[in-house]
Length: 540
Ligand code: ADP
Image (cartoon, rainbow, N blue to C red; front, side, top):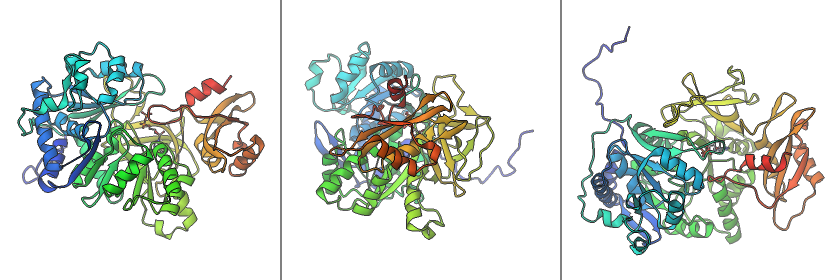
């Protein structure tokens, strides 16, 4: 029997949660608030939400003229700048889907996803045009739009479109269609370290909810008083929702363009009075070195959000203790359209001793409303949240994918939960500790050894710049850990000293079998260490 709601009259309005409404709101109530954008043709360009909406309106009309319809995928191959921002709103205004493409994924994956997504148009940064065209030489040039006003490249690529020319004669009124909140709005592929990339299809509703969650005080607390610098790329999980959140909050938005070096970011942070910035630990590592060298922090920068991989404790302490910049450590993934957990304080956190507060920072934070977490064992049985037992991390919520786009593989979806592929522990307060990717966990004597925990300890050694741990086959124990270390410049360390250092800080049986030294670690397009490549290299 279907349940009927006895109250059929007098309910709240059914106003859909849509992406264009975020920009319309910002343009109306935060019209003068600035968006600053670093571009190759205009240098550091600035305008405001009202002007951005008018240009996004022109763009939506141009897209319609080019034949873009509801449900069509439109690719972007671009950095964080104001034109990418305009695409973020103009494409969904038509009911079409922003397909953000990671420029670092390599030609084979690139050509696969453009074909799989069936992109009708692709908007490309001038500096990335040769890479894109090289990977998909058959994609018609008249379906490519260069994100510039500069016509220099047009001569080399006959028929190609120029972004600013497209906007010239269009009306500023948004070419809006009546959008339902459950319609698709965005598409982002995983970086596909195993197998081909898989598409996560975001909806208007999930994107608005992610933005709202990012604004919450218990998450990133993005308000109209903030100046937000998303260093995490707009092609990576919608920049974790902070671009949409900035429009929702009417925050000043600073878009850094292609140059993410510390020497480019620090003056930008200073000049534009950035208060909060968001990115992966690899980028923040360079920033910390720069701040240590110059001895001064950007003047009003108060918070850095980091996620994507686990930052070393030395990095968190460096920012917080030496430079007075708070670190918010979070966890998420492509399949979770934004944040899955974040390390803000809990009610009891203020009572903790300083050392415990510092330890808590290393965890990936706690669930937010909207991301329900649980652990299961190999047999699918629930594992207790006791801070000790580890299990496969499952998540469900309104911004978690329910399947993959154009893909029948449902093996990650079980009884309404998504299997993240991460192995984790959860404590009684819901704080999450990612211990491994399931495929990287080291199975030794029937127990699991956390490669991330060994890496974190190894990185505490003064001579270690970076570390990775993989499992190597062992006749007795099945697998044993091998530590791969990138030594810090001008430091030397010998294997036994390092093993003693690591061994003393971990359960006895986690002590790695050996150490190999290497100049670098192989990384994927999102900066994550490629353990598959390390296994190919070191497992004989
Ligand atoms: P990919 O496309 O490679 O899946 P994602 O950015 O979606 O790229 O990667 C998500 C994965 O990154 C997570 O499943 C987890 O393993 C790892 N990850 C994300 N944030 C953290 C973090 N704070 N600490 C440790 N690992 C993290």
